[in-house]
Amino acid sequence: MNYHFSDKVSGLKASAIREILKFTSEPGVISFAAGNPAPEAFPTEKIAEISDELLRTDPILALQYSITEGYPQLRNMLKERLASLNCFRNDCDDLIITSGAQQANELSCKVLLNEGDTLICESPSFIGSLNSFKSYNVNLVGVELENDGINLQKLEAAIKSNKNVRLLYLIPNFQNPTGLTMSWEKRKAVYELAKKYDFIILEDNPYGNLRFNGDEIPSIKSIDTEGRVIYTGTFSKILSPGFRTGFVSAPKEIIQKIVVCKQVSDVHSNIWAQVVAFRFMQSVDIEQHFNGLRDIYRKKCNLMLSEMDKHFSKKISYTKPDGGLFIWATLPDDCNMNDFCKKAVAEYKIAVVPGNAFCISENDKTSSFRLNFSTPTDEQIVKGIQILGKMSRDLLD
Image: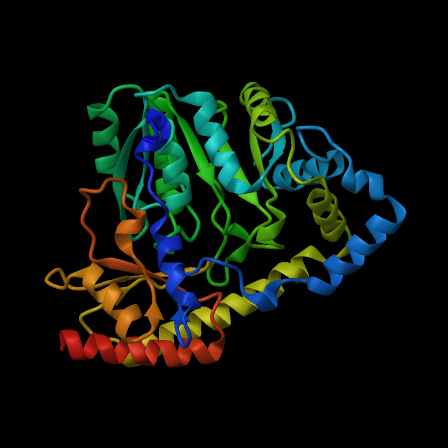
């Protein structure tokens, strides 16, 4: 039988990251291709303790249907935390719990864009969000990144040259896949462009609590006085990605539409996970917990960078992130990046993600690839970077 798929999904392809991860199940493969938190970062004993108490003392709360907006106590706690960062205003904002930040971004696109409307994003950008945007047949336009964030001149040119620019999607902190952070000056400038050209900013901040170097930079949401910024976050990197618990803080009118769309999608997010997340945040010293995560990722990132400094060909450049989970390495222009990545996993048993997995268009060219330092063990980082480094020197020097 010939199946006729809808226009919304016919052009979607399986994530290149997921395809590469298939190789990681082979014996001996060291994977720098994942985007998972470090296994040692999970507070497993505390989660087990909270879950046990919840299921013994209030099992119906965890097992019964709940409300679409999310567990009220978790929502109130998040509102208070965000308000302390000027990311939530009681007079104009509301907040909904979502199934991870992935759903938060997808629903934001769904409620604001029609087919053919323009959504601008950083190039490269997070493949999960890109696929969700593409599923709505929007005009997806990428703008290249500089070391301190999106190129402002090219951003304004893209705004002027495309019709119906409705949304700008950004990951300002430790961007996936590059690890770059947008400067305070650019955050302010981007917001001024949003006011000038009348569009909304979708600010995705899954890694913000994982800064392990440098000073905090205020969010774009914190300077929003006109209801132009949607702010999304997640518990995936600070507690557990398996919880699939994220949130959206946005003007009340937008949240009302997101609530209706979420009711169509999944009724509500996992209520057990929401209650556990709330009780965890309530019962621990949360800053101490965050500092523990930062210590883990600082050590892993520094270890990978030091090994890259020692072993990589000097013809390869790479970012040095101040937080998050990723390093973005760039080969010389005359080196075929896809062949390099295929050779690494097929012959050297080292998996990295080719940069074109994060491109906006199939026609975009990149000579970069992404490495993840959070998931592999320290021993795997040392061994894997030594092997990848020798391969790079043999090919490039």
